[in-house]
Amino acid sequence: MPSIRDLFHSLGNKHNILTIGCGATKEVVSECLKERGLSKELKDKLIEIQGNLESIIKETFEADKITIEIHDRIYKIIDPDTGKLRGV
Amino acid sequence: MDKNQSLKLLVVDDEPGIVDFTEKIYARRGFVTFGATDGIAAVEIFQKERPEISLIDIHMPYSLIDGIETLRRIKQINPNACCIMITRITDNEAVRQAKALGALRYVTKPLELADLDKVIEEAKEKVQNG
Image 1 (spheres, helix red, strand yellow):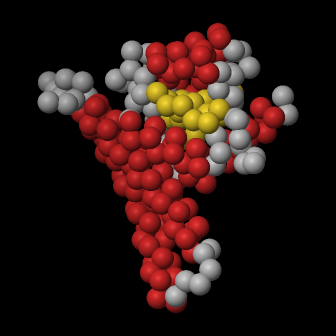
Image 2 (cartoon, rainbow over the protein chains, first blue to last red):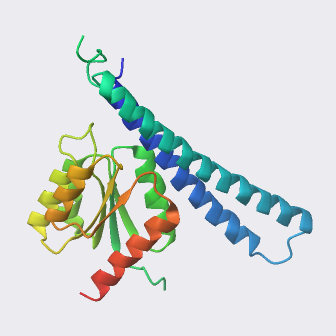
């Protein structure tokens, strides 16, 4: 079973993949939007996708802040390597 | 010709997905990219390819050497190597060590692409202006 330290490390990495990945995808969508002759319907869909990606990025930053708070609280009471309560 | 053409960028992170994404993003921007998921491989690539810019994750528990030791070895090969360190907010001591070893900048995870672009642009200017 992975340790608490491993789990928090992995979680942080996943947040990083989400923010970088969504940022890169948003960039590709922006380039698509610059293409000439797009129908209004298609433009609106692309703009909506951009908004969705932006939401994922914002929510991921929020999730990461909460993860750090939980990290600090857990590390105070549980040894992250052994999973055992401290001082017991 | 792309303005970043021929500049080499080394991406070092123990999460393969990050390495893959970051390499693809900066290859699209014209960099010649290299990736490593551990410090030892990163130093070997650095020795062989001499990238102008290296992006190094500090905390790599699955690597034989962490990002700080990777930075130290890269600086031994080239003291002028332009290295950007990636860290979590909680890694204050590691940031202090990275600065002492001559890292150009550090950025905190999770990374926003625009922020990463800014520090890489700064590194690029430093490389191009000597």
